[in-house]
Length: 411
Image (tube, rainbow, N blue to C red):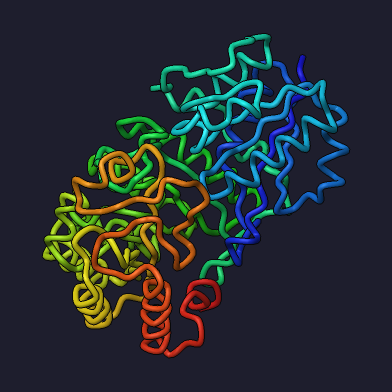
């Protein structure tokens, strides 16, 4: 048996609500390790102090770190710290950055897992000595342990519109290929938990005292037949929930089914209300589809969150202002306005010139900031952050709030 400390990085420099939700990936990994006879020890640095982590490291044979490109500098520096203070502990890197840029971590980690981590981390804990590890993606998600069974009860819970909310995943990845998306780290095609497995997880969440689920699936409604069955079963439970969907998948019937089964809101990656921009992003959606889905949702009483990118390929100041005005006209309940970040492994990172862009390929950029590593030729680098702040301020004023972000948490 190996003791494996699983470390998630501190997000407080980036997120106001850091630590309100667990890293689902670590819960899945912990379950897989426990099932194989190893001992997982989770250290979420949004909750643990570094002293608490040090105490856990004293028991470790291995330490696995979730890696994200925006946290690259912290990751390599902390790996050095761990190596210096715990030289006998083998370090494992996994997660998004390890998957798309493993060579950038070779100097700092004994093992690097590219792709899905459950099988590789068990193999490493069981004696696999290979440094770069890349297993095939598991097609039977129901065989994985239930992540909530590894939850440190009492630490987590989001306040979403007055509901005590926990995150769940009913699927992994997505069948579409937007130019900026990192979904391939979870596999090229979307894979699903069965409706029966999802219902079982919801019931466990209810037993823990949660009355709301935030489904993290990129596209909850992608398989309409499955979504119908799932909403029928969820409707038998006393639970509120929130999903993400593509606009071309939210029919009026599906919107009604979501609402009737307890959904209160749906999130769309709208990106822009401009067909030329949507085409350059390979969204395979149109402004007309966006508007129809928003209206389908509103017609049945679902709230709508729209995510928008300010500086995608082809966007101009004029297209952004048009997008802002249309978001107001449709009276979206929530809207997020982001700077475009090109992440390693995405089409935009690999072929920026194809989209008329230049990309700064240094690590550390994050879409939560107003700074972008993408120059689409239409925004001055110094002026873009100011413009994004103006858009966010305008939206907040439209919503009648000092900070529109607050609306979701306390409404």
